[in-house]
Length: 201
Image (cartoon, rainbow, N blue to C red; front, side):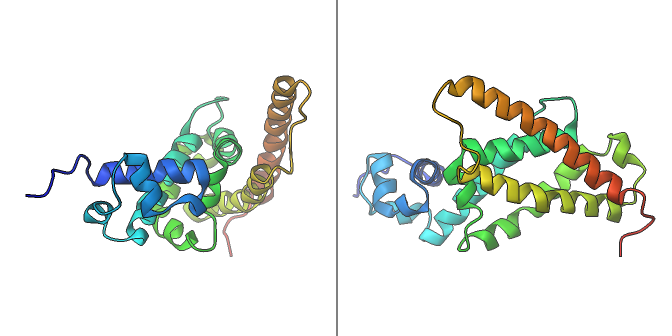
């Protein structure tokens, strides 16, 4: 009788997530997952049948974390908080941000993000700026802001807005304040530019 396995499919997914979080996709293999579990490679595929299945589960878990970042209250302005959460995720979880936005895995992300997009939209239902907007217009404003925000997140993620070594804590606080002020301006410009429209073409 073969020895009883000490882990389950969720453990394999947890280990794969930990590897990608630490090293990116380049670090992920059956061997690194097995090492994370202190096991041999043979049982890995008994739980998740292929590396593609493992990678899809990792993307799913990353998106759940991403959603938590976007949903965390910070300023009392839900729309601003979503933007700040987006940038914080890009800065604090560099490998995870890249792992859902690379060419190989973007299709998985696109398949899984519709419920997240809808849930984030529902968070804005009580915001007076959006309450009386037609759904299509509300969605359009959110998409325009997302186009801008994703580009900014990419710059943050790749270190374009690097913080100097000297007095890094104070510099980080300054960057955070300036980022918040900048995003408030961006939100206002995008909202005011489109909210007056009666319909979206």
